[in-house]
Length: 328
Image 1 (cartoon, helix red, strand yellow):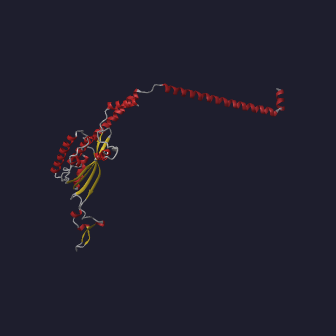
Image 2: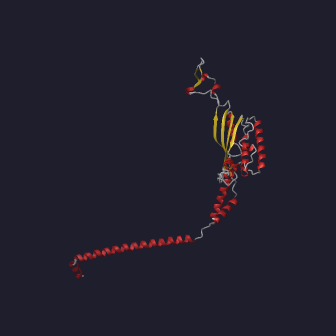
Image 3: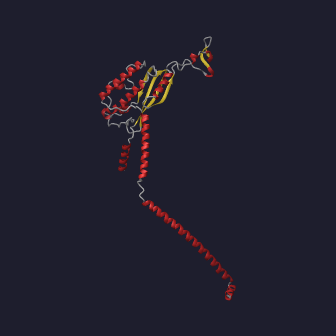
């Protein structure tokens, strides 16, 4: 022991350095121990996560019978809601009706006769020999076979629109127009038939009801003369039609312009001495100041008549989906 103390006294700095090195070595060892322990813990957690991931990959989770049954119930509810909404909106919509050209001409002439008789009975004036938007067929022209189903549909819609005119006390039918879808095909007739070179491709027609689309619409325009009350009555009757009809534009023109109320409540008129001037509105009679409502006005109504596609069948829908999935 004495020798150790003498050595320490003799080599003080060396002893201090050795002591410091020992302390540092112990600190590094302790730090290494804790790092190794943490690494071992994290490695165990990583191995556990990898084991769970491998287990998830190896599990046969698809298809799950419970999930399939649940999704089928949701699909059935969705299709049922769609069919219910479609049935409510479709109502008694006018469907396309294919027929032969000769049969169409007979149907067209009979329908024109019914429309004219209905308007004449209801005291609704209309132009002589008016064909209600089908003038070229009234002249004896046969329609193209592909156009007949939609033409039949438009003739029926036109008849439904004309049927309510007498009920609304419309005094005069000025005109009625439709989507002349066949005109586009006529303009794109093969140029080779006219000796002008190769034929141009015909433009695509607007999809009509009865196809695979969810809905389609056709535009109609009605110009007539009636009182204000008759116009409002006609709008209400259009809203109550069995076919889904949406009025897109209303234009009303008052042909009487001799009476008007100017700014400041002054009535345009003649003075007591016969000279032109302004009279207070209260000095004019109420009948002269009330213009709209007692005389006929000119009105133009534009509307879209909608058709909705067929309802979705539960079994057919699943079958078609299964077929598409197998093909893909």
